[in-house]
Image (cartoon, rainbow, N blue to C red; front, side):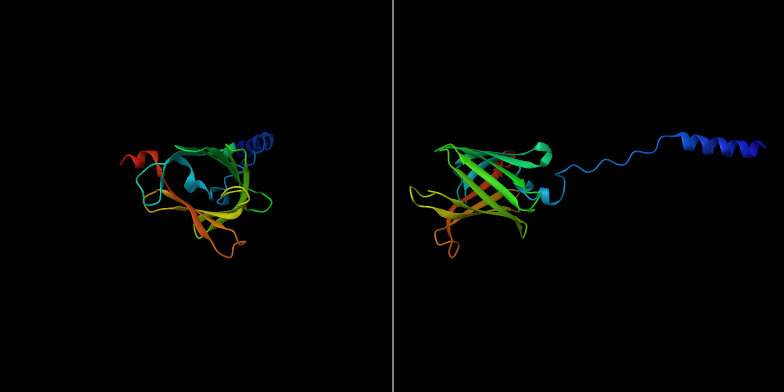
Length: 177
């Protein structure tokens, strides 16, 4: 009789135990697609490609639980600005809004292409009053851990492209080496 009572007691204890709660869902912005711009996150010294003369500092941060990327651009000459980038949950495309200290806003859109982030947007007055262009920026991780931001402009709706800027972002601790 004792052999039957013990299993019944265990069965009753199991029935009275609260159910195991389900595992919490993963963070909203923890997908592989949300990591598409992680190559750019960091504290950077910025140089024109091929030059050792630093022209800016830049801080790139993941915010809002990894749902957005904020850039703070701090050039040594000229005006600075900020961009905010996010993966649009409806289109699965990256969107970036740049606002410069001149009060102008530029909206870019794109995504990861062959391991690089490529964003394109229409920039009013980019080369002066009335000189608008389609601007394409490609962010690539280099073998030494730095990041290249290659900007190209097109005044013929993307038929031809000319380099408008070409920066190398070196990590603050890397730039001192």
